[in-house]
Image 1: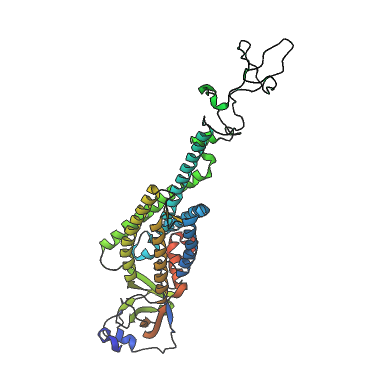
Image 2: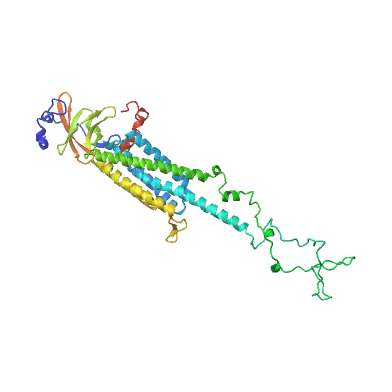
Amino acid sequence: MDFCSHLVNATIGSTNITWGQATSNLLSADFKRDSYLRPDTAGALLPWIYTIVLTIVHIPVVLIRVVRWQAVQYWCLVFTFFTIVIYIQAYISTAFDASKVLVWTPLILVIDAGSMLQVFFLIVEAKKESVEDQIEDVEKNLSPLSPSPQPRSIELQDRNSQPPENANTVPNTEQSEGSSNLLAPESSNEGNTAAPAIPPPAAIEPDPVRRRAVIPDGFFSSGAVANAKGQRRWYRDPTNYAMISAAVLFIIVLVLQILGLVKAAQATSRSPEPPSTSWCSPLFQPFGLAAVDGNCNVYPIDQSAHRGIGCIHIPGQWQQHWLKGSVAGISIELVTELIDLLILSLVNGRRKIFQAVKLKRPWTTMFSGLVVLIVTLIYGFNYSQYLPPGLTEKVMVFMDVQGPAAYAGTLTGGGLRGTIIGWNDGLFESWKATYFGNWSP
């Protein structure tokens, strides 16, 4: 090899074959065609097609959460539960291996943490407002100075009631003889005097014991008083289950974030060097011993005949960047969650911005969550189209089949298919034969 003359007399791996012997038998270009290079198990970021679906779902949900959060509260609970299951599965399968950080990094969880905070605090606020409104109605309905009569009211005095027998009668001397007193009953044959005139209502001093108490029909039977005092049985209210679920799911999300932060920090502090990652291609199969790229970097080939590919190990610079990014990103996300926690717990629920949108929303986690999705989408697409850093497209593969030989080839990115295979294999690696079949690694 002209471009790697210093390797001519060196042996290939553990064999006694030198590079010079292999290059002396250079096979024709038709022996091997160009092929792709894809990440091995857990070496791929979330496939960009998955990220697009998540983004399409989250954008309208975020908008609805701003204006009518009640319409999507149960959807948020279900989606957060699904996301938690995925990340627990990723943690178990990858065992927090630094080379597999692209699968287990919990950066996307920030949007779920914000949604659970919102569901919890807004349900609490709605319950508080409901109780206050009911208590206000109770106080209003039981007011002694209620101006308008209501059903089931206690009258001050019945107009048709007869005066007591020992009551003194006072004749009406102010009426003229020819006028008729409409309020006086007809005289009996025994010569009873006329009934006393009833003074105007304003002249009546209300008796504190006999004040008007206005009670609406069905008030006690409807359970409003019990509701107002918080005595309604909690298990009959479905929002209580939503509130408790939101609190539990938020705690789980927070634990997953902190666990991911600790593991990423430990990985970055343990070694300054990038972790070794595996990349596979049919170009290295079936008899390849080693590959040399245009920079004269030598990569021993691990054969995986049952998968029809051979794999090489490359320093994982992408993984190293994501380990450091996870430490910084999760730390920032925890701060945004604290900010939203303060907003949701301290801001008045009726306060609005721009006179239209309520301020009591998890603004920072919603914004940062969408930013994380967009960043993941961009990097996921780029990783699927390009080779890992440090590896050139042109490579020379050396093999030993009835004598040493070599052939040249060109590598390209693994595309969406390669990314899906690498990410799915990493996510379900712990399922062993259930996922991989009988040839499970």
